[in-house]
Image (cartoon, rainbow, N blue to C red; front, side, top):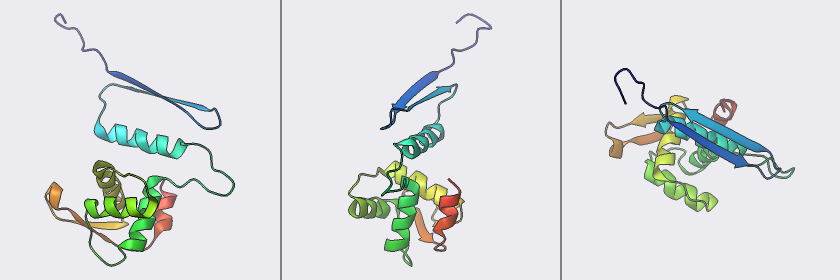
Length: 138
């Protein structure tokens, strides 16, 4: 680049085609951060096909909140505990980074209390069994 030239803007394009044939195209331009990618993952998770009449769409954040209410109503837990419980409950993989991000969001929404300072020593506790608030914020 010569003097005064602007750096090239980064551009990421993602296309997802739903079960019904609908196409979702997302283009990110500029600084692509982990938080933006996680927001995009949430969007794709919500989009992941239309609801069937027998089974309404329930995203991973809501499923995680339900599982926490069921498995950790009074106990403190870590993101590792949640990964193990989620996989046992739903038979699906959940990465540690996804669990940590979702637990942070649930804490920000007042569903969980967060304690501990270091990244590998964060513990959570259910504040109240008000899942409706988590579902309503989506």
